[in-house]
Structure formats: structure tokens, C-alpha cells
Length: 225
Image 1 (spheres, rainbow, N blue to C red):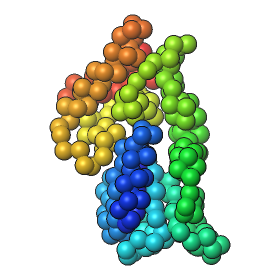
Image 2 (cartoon, rainbow, N blue to C red; image 1 turned 90 degrees about the vertical axis):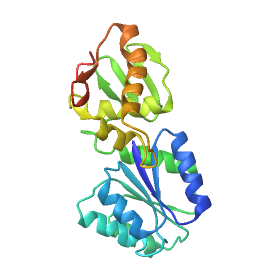
Image 3 (cartoon, rainbow, N blue to C red; image 1 turned 180 degrees about the vertical axis):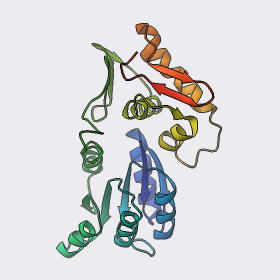
Image 4 (cartoon, one colour; image 1 turned 60 degrees about the vertical axis):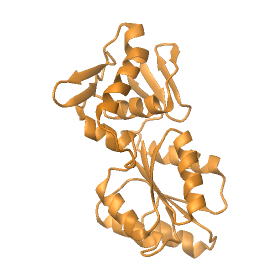
């Protein structure tokens, strides 16, 4: 899952990026409202962590403009203020949730997980394809009754494939969601990580859930292989 963090305080931005990456997210950082609007319109983020008090336009205006542009990813607003008016202003601008600084990182992670699964039609608590299951909150992968140990990046890749099961996904689409825009390598990294996943969730169980679509990319079979 790919997140945009909008925070002008360098130390706070670094803390957020590091902490969220440890949770398995790909994270891009913007330090101003202008950069946030560009990134939010350009890339398909799964959620945005948005500081209210950033160099103009401020976080409230950024949220409002993103909604006007039809960008409906969940937005968690952060602010040092605790006035009711600011919370109301943020929610009226289109934010989905609100945290006042200082906040617990554990609470931020929990709120993001809740927002990302709010639409139960598209974001169920447990993602499934046949007997292949992934629990985003517990960060557990199972094939039948067997727990499968995967790396953080492998987990993110499998989560994206499961959320879009049955769809053919190009390498560039996968890169956009699973790697941040600081990644300057080639799409060959997708092939490498798909191979790693197959060695863990398919071959030991005599399954072929992750299919190669020649000339295009990959597809996770809806029946789990």
C-alpha cells in the first residue's frame, strides 16, 4: 500500500516515513501544499497523512482541492492545534480522520488500518483468494492452515495483488503502489519479488495463483490457484 505523508517538519517527516515503512507501507513525502497537490493528483495513493499547518496552501485547502479533483483516498489530518473549530474545518474539507499532535504512532497506524478497510466491499478485514489469506492488520499470510513467512515488501506486493485479484496488473502499476517514487531502478524488481512470492505461497503448496501475462504483467487468480 502506498501512502503520501505531507509534513514540513523534516524530523517529523522522517519519523513518519520510517515508522510507516516498518509497518509495510511504501511512503512518499511532500513538504508543502503545492508538492502535496501535485503528488496527490499524479499518483494513485491508498491514503494520505496530511499535516494541517504546511506552507501554502495549507492542509485544509490541500484536502479540499484533492476532493474537488475526484481524489477520494482516505485522509488523516495532523495538527498541533486542538480547537474544535480546526477539527470541524478539517472534516468539512473532506478529511476522514483527525489526530492532534503529539500523538501515538500506534494510534496513527490503527486509524490508517481502519480507514483502509472501511469499504468492506473493496477492503475486507481479511483478503482471500481460495485458501490464500492475508490479514493486513495482523500482517499474517496463510495458505490453508499454514502460516507463510514473507518479507515486508513481499507482504505489500501480495496485498496489492489480492486487492486486485483477477485483474491483469502491469509492472508499472505494481511499482506505483508497492514502491515509492524515490525508487530509481527498473521494473525488473517486480519480476524478482514475484518470483520470491511464488517460492513461498505457490510452489510449496503445488499452486499457481500468480500468473504471468506475457507482454503485460501479472495476475493473481481469484480462486487462489
